[in-house]
Image (cartoon, rainbow, N blue to C red; front, side):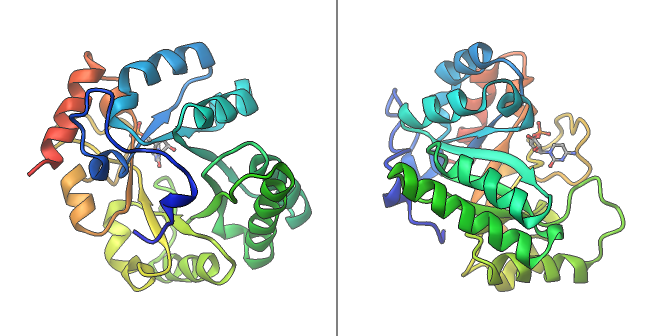
Length: 246
Ligand code: C5P
């Protein structure tokens, strides 16, 4: 994994001491909800399994700074999934705010081009420096699963935009891992759309199993409804970790 986790003291063993740190550090829980109280309740149940918490547009819109700062203070890597895409000045200013909150990661659309991605990276660094915090890594969103028109060449071009403009990683679907392999030594690869074999794909069209995605080179798995929408989320998290043990 290409990131420097020593910059942020997180992960390690679960409360119960049963979830190995090397597994927990590869798992990000998607807090796709608009209620910080509910998110905290979920984290109190599932935190032992996940080193990273993903704050998406819903939760960020509801309680962004409180969510990011609070979970960072609790020792989690916080992944601000805002998928920024606007003019470079606006993206840079928004990234500066996120950089000041204590996030570990923030997403930006590589489709926005080199200047916009560079502005995001610079904004994160400025915000973090102003707050005396480590600089969050920018993650370049490559191809959304809803985008049925992007080609392999588009994917490669977007990886290059991310790598050349200071991103620490990319977001890509599991089937895109082979195409993004040439950037694996420069970019952390974060993969959503993870499902246990045979489970409900929901609206995900390009799913993969957790072990399969890690074996294909994913560094960090984004885990959402596979666990959060399960009848018993703790049992689903246990099953996920069990599938990665041994
Ligand atoms: O589908 P799941 O609940 O596992 O989604 C987890 C994350 O994957 C979401 O927070 C969203 O950012 C992303 N996602 C995606 N493509 C979809 C649906 C969700 O990449 N079609």
